Image (cartoon, rainbow, N blue to C red):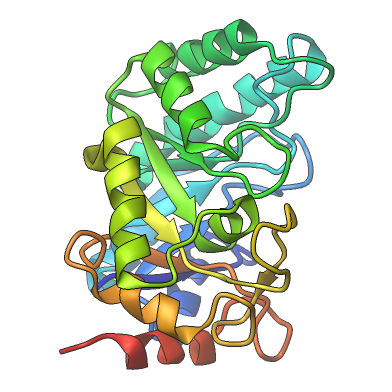
Length: 274
């Protein structure tokens, strides 16, 4: 089973490999640069070689980038342009590091929906980046783009590119009113996803508990088993025949408040059936 976490790149990308190995993960998510600024990703040959050589030993796979929190591809002006440049830089270096692609919050519509701008910006990013880099849309839990699976499906249909995939965050689904707390409800959700988007588009899960109640429209992450989603629901998801083969990556606050940690991963491992 693929269980991993988001880890810091402080000290370089290779340090993130060491961090995920130290907490018992076998897949990984990282930022390519600071997530709170427009510092476009650059990669030198030494950094690339060190990363690839170390991962040949550790075999952490898959690895994903998570795009900057500033990205808003629905913006037709400065922010939209910076968002495109940021993603083009990120998706361009991903194959050089054998990173699958980038997980992206699409942003928000300011005054009224502007689907043409959003779709055209995504298409432009895809045209200017390598074919092997995946553009992975993450669902939203609040009033951002992607709260509704139907909206994600509409975007994917309009972009019409096989490189577009989906990352489902359990906390965000919970916040948006998607119930998967029993076997029957999880089956129903999976059928709905397959009908609207297609299971072949489902790339991975962000597996996070929630600080807030069901259908609250608030998507604050909590440590596994400490929130309102609960261990029973995570056990169902980790062992379902459709979802258990996918990567699960935690973005939890950590039991010591220092970010995703071994204790969260160990709890998830304890829920996996033999």
